[in-house]
Length: 222
Image (cartoon, rainbow, N blue to C red; front, side, top):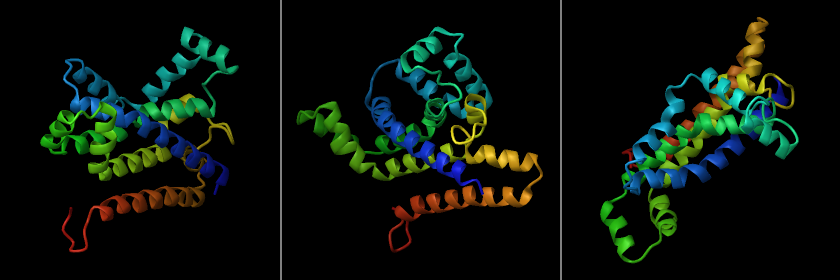
């Protein structure tokens, strides 16, 4: 078991999930409460990673963040190093790739809030920020939990974006999914079984926590 890769995967998933929640909550609120004609293209753009092959997304990010583009050169001048093949680059790629898994549960949760409550809060003078934080988020807390867990698990298991954007640098960009790929490629199926079992166990436990959290004692789903 490559515990260094395991720790790096946990760190990447935790940082990515924290950033995604900060970005996804206002974005989901805008998609639900907004009235602009540009919201449909914005929602489509946020959902694009669901249908875009991970290697394609990773390739575009690798090119954009590389030294051949103005964006890449600007980032290199600002940070002193390119984002490609670094942990920071993995965070950028992971946030973009896992964005739909944070936004869509929140959109569903916010849309399920009774419209009369939203209208009443607006009539009482609630600002958009207070409307989201004091009304939508508390009433859609299970959707918030689902967004956090799905984002975390999706980041833990992502492969294509990590491989294209970060490569396989021990201690810097080598995650558990890369380790699993290397173990299978080397026909080390015993080690691959252990790595896959850890990823599977994390997924089962986290998803069970979501579903059990929304089921009352009587057994009927809330």
